Length: 537
Image (tube, rainbow, N blue to C red; front, side, top):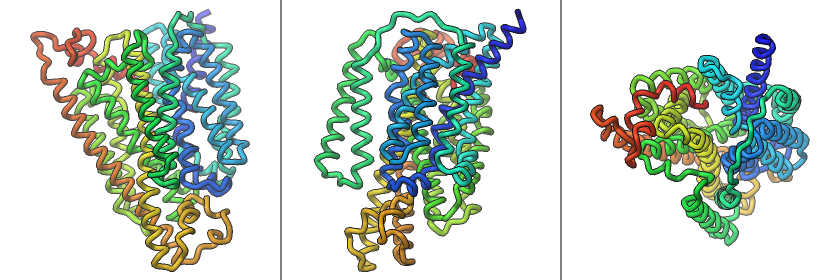
């Protein structure tokens, strides 16, 4: 009986780890395939942005609702449904013959990931009831999740080069099918509980985010004064304001805005959002530069990201120990500052850059990123009451995804606008008609390679103008992201510093808004290790 129970636990852990690995892997493995997707599907920069954004945008908009659906209809049932949707989306993406179908498939993947991931930690806790076993299981589950983010570019590059870009989606199908069968057999069904689903909040947030991101992505090509772009931007902002007003009025909201009243919580959540803003933006554009401008192969671009991967692995455990010993403020601020340094440093290298010259920036960004993950989770989880930990953890995940969404959209808008201006000036000097700017802007992605004779074989001076304009745009985007991270590091240091100063051993501290010690304050020093163990990667 004991062996059967242990085997069932092992299979349940394997199932949960497989699903989380796939969901995290898909966040990054597609980036290295983007140049080939641009070539084969004739997609420009905005089209490739949608390939990346389709997944993250839907995931971020739905993940909080996904948690509520799991509570109401059963965690295991929703996990199986989410994994099945993710697998189906992967198959459709692999078969996509147009950029529109691929974006739709990515959105289906995002729906699946948002439905399956919120219940994973809860299922893990239900399977492993012994605290020591649970800690080990959570550690393995978190490690596998982080591994998915780390190895994505490394395994994606060779797959794209030798098997084609569709292989990064096909790999999910057999694994997903096996996961669905296993999950249906070995995952325990946690009794559902009555819970109100905030459909209004979901509709407002999804529509608002979608319209705002659309305006940011399409602004450079359509023009920022375009009625469509302005209308979508204004409507998106209005819908998001309506979402915030609605959440403040609900007894059981999708997003608990009270969390933002605590200075430490606000600082940590701001850090989660902005690290993803800068780093996911960099990880989206770096493969385009390495393959489109520097002439690297997909495998080379994937292997080129190994220093960042290595530093993520090294810094992760170190950040947990630093957070336990010194509190989350020090590693979080240092990590954000290192991300800013690496991103700003990368902007110093142009289209004649050599890898050995700028590899230090990859080490710096990877180490900085790794330093922030655990402290952000610790800073949040040690400041909230136990009943709020699920909501707090989900909020961290949501803001990380949203940071990536807006990083790619906003920094992409900066890059494309600067590239268009630079290319227009260069074409004027070369005597090339300004009407050619639109198609040539997409040349570094491969989207212009099939756009006709004008882009089929660019003359030397014209190719240099395109590469130079792309590099100038990329540099401005990186410097913008770096500046935003510098400001974030200062704000996080101030917010977490203010939250720490009022605490005293005499009164046990308290939260910034007067909460009891269990909800924060005096519990900060007593619970960092517990929070570090519970924090998802």
